[in-house]
Image 1: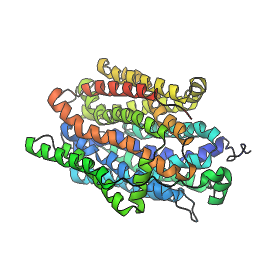
Image 2 (image 1 turned 45 degrees about the vertical axis):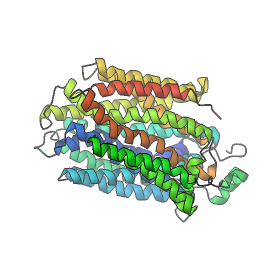
Image 3 (image 1 turned 90 degrees about the vertical axis):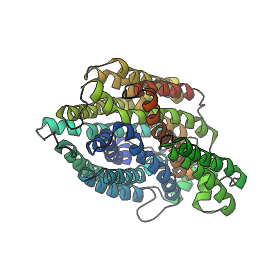
Image 4 (image 1 turned 120 degrees about the vertical axis):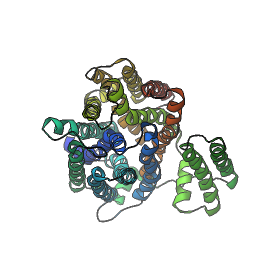
Length: 488
């Protein structure tokens, strides 16, 4: 059945096939999120340096997603438009997952994290645009809700696998500098599941051809030209600011993580200056598209900034917080620490189980009643309450209550901004704009990675629990910023 003037409506099977590959991608992300701090600490890294090592994940997203979005908008061949990127990313991510638990030293583990996250981003970014490609606007909320349900289910599987293997009798103890078999086999199984899930979507969906897309969208199918490149002068303040910050870090011997922030400022300024001279090529197009973002995208950017800052704090510090304050396990080589690490996997699994249920049964009726924007604000406020729960709850099972609020927020973060945005973007640039939208996911994570370690060392040394207070405040700011967004 066709909607008037739009794409054919998809039944449940169609919605399932379009997003099933995200189940495998999220298994990979969940294994990364739940276990990389444990991998780094097991290889001898201190808790203070964890944020700097984690910076690989958001930095690769910053570099990869806009480029993949740009090219996937312009790709059409025998295997379609988005599907070649799904498959290539999945194959590379699977290889990285197989290699990660065998990393002999910290440097190898850090490099594998770069490869893993880049590969997952290559596979993931086109999936966001794929929903917009395949579904009519009247089904965008349903499509992103189903995608979020698969994200939640994949995260449950990936996060809970070490705990489940432990209860099946697999060894959960490792020698100093090594990983237990529960973690090792979780990475192997996760890699296989990722590849099979993405293959399902690749083999069961047929993308619309450029001619069909033009027929669906009419004149809107023609890609708008990027905004004119900035002048050379527009890049100078960014370049000077980055250089000045780098010099300040060197002279005052500030934390070395701040060099990354200085480098990003300088790189942005240099990119603006280069595009002002060349006025062509992918860099010029990306900078032009970034400058010409729709107003709604700019408003949602602030919401994403605060939301993902809070999430990144959680991913980096949940394991140290739970190990220190709930399991009282300071020794990272002991059985009790690994038990705490497995319980963090259960907490993240519970969060994602809640997210799956919220995506299927809560978000759509709530959005229909109060609108997508207000529904998102309510969900983010519940997430702030969940983070605050870590400040007062000291029982492992009681922390599951805190995960209810965080899970609802997580479901909304994965669905609502994209459902709001997809209906306001030109179809021919859906991929590149979804990739550029990821910048506002990545930048806050980079800022957290460069600043949170410094804040904790100077204000709360040895007290990681305060990271959850920071996360609660930041998530509340995201809820307030959401109220500035106006739906199309």
